[in-house]
View 1 (cartoon, rainbow, N blue to C red):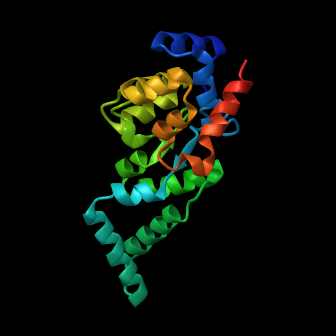
View 2 (cartoon, rainbow, N blue to C red):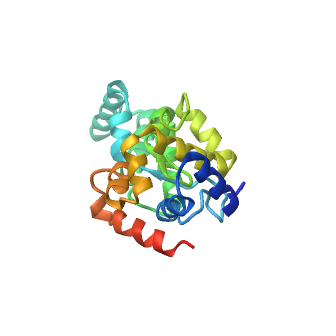
Length: 206
């Protein structure tokens, strides 16, 4: 695990035009300040079943439905049974521990590797794979490869994402936590109190 130092965070934040304390607050809320599982060394992830359904091709979704019907009729092949088992593992995932998250992700990867990566949030900033272009990566594969290398790469990607969204960048600079949460975490941010958690994290960072 190639971990970030406080000096690296400070330098990267200032170079991007943001107060280091604000950047630290965002990192603290997203992952507690670590981009890797401290036990396994794997990237921290959150696999999102709803996004996986959206990112799969219609053809692949049709294959899954045919496999489901075949299983119900007792005529499913071994390949179809394996496909359904993987699909059900992906769709059962909630906000789980990392072992379960990786089980769901690996099941999704066996169905469609690109859709699986696009539908997962990655590393220190918990950025969704489908945002790869805004983070400066031509493909989601490139994002994942870069994030595996170091937390410094993860932070750099997050800062590029913020800079690519003018309204988010303004909110970060103004410490408008509601707007930061809206643009970073989505319209449902209040359900998880992201704005309050960001304000509390900022207050706790020295």
